[in-house]
Amino acid sequence: MIDKIKMVLFVLILGTILSSALISVNTFTTPLIERNQAVKLQKTVLSAFGYSYDADNLDEMYNKNITALGEGETLHYKGENGLIAFPYKGKGFQGEITGIIAMEADIQTISGLAILSQVETPGLGSRIGEESFLSQFPGQKFSPELVFTSAGNAESQNEIDGISGATLSSKAIINILNDNFAGFKNIVEGE
Amino acid sequence: MAESKSVKTIMNGIWRDHPVFSMLLGICSALAVSNKIENAIAMGAGVTFVLLATGIIISLLRKIIPKQVRMIVYMITIASFVIIVDRVLKAYFPEISDSIGPYVGLIITNCIIMGRAEGFYVANNLGQSFLDALSNGFAYTYTLVAVAAVRELLGFGTLLGFQVMPDFMPRWVVMSMAPGAFFVLGTLIWITKTISGQTED
Image 1 (cartoon, chains in turn red, brown):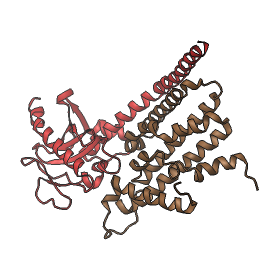
Image 2 (cartoon, one colour):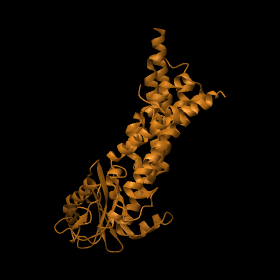
Image 3 (cartoon, chains in turn green, brown):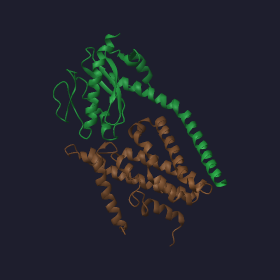
Image 4 (cartoon, chains in turn red, orange):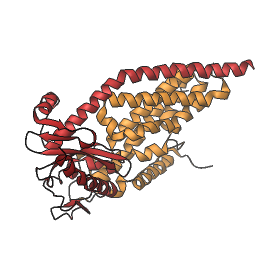
């Protein structure tokens, strides 16, 4: 009997100590993590608009060039350079992909694409975040929508080369953009 | 010359009882995050840190852990430190966290840590456990880096992100995917078993 009580007490005490360690780590890191997320959002928006920035002038660049309009579902961004950007999100191969797409005033031509968060397989699907893939999008048009082609075959204005080894993730992001595109005009007209 | 206990612990960890080659532990994470050297190093460092922390806690408490609940004790210790690693990575190294994020949680299920806790830390003092954690963590890391070096070179043509292979060399896409890891790890296990002369009984 005494053994059983000792056993329960031991687990209880160890659990309490470890939980308090976790709580203190959590309190300590939460503001830093939130700050990192805010910084990442600013960076993503700036790079979708095609502004260059560095760590020192991030806030300044953001405040000078970008105005956020609407909220929730109708959130979008206007840039000093006349572009307009929308957040997009949808289901990737492994989980949710979110990001920012900047469009020209016609709301049909893409001028920049950036990914905010994705949990695709590291080293495989995660390569949709690489410059070589994202740099295909500027200049392409939703006419009437983006089309996936296998690597090296993109020709027309609405075709995007997939990444071999990351076919499903490349397809996923193109589908996400097509799905989200339908809502963009409504957001702007609703102003 | 008789080797001291510490030397024996280290040698066992990094070679004779190598956690991956000899005991075939931690295989799933070794397969999953070994496609780029960068990811391999980050994962190795995470596992080493959790091994060290678990080794210290378990060896210090080994005399008072009631033996009926020792598995639960390992589990909550390991889980707590994994969460700490995850939060610290997110707060201070957001880029590394983005690239291996989903796998950090999987350190909890890395059987090397559970295996060493049950097989070594619960029966040895702090100093020996510390050495054992360090050498096992090192063994796991160099294995991951070795597999990742082959896979990154053949699959992406780069090493640590720098282009090494000329552009005309075709990329072996299979190397950057899971089957490539099986080929490379299998070959490495074959080589190390042959060198060390270990065979199945």
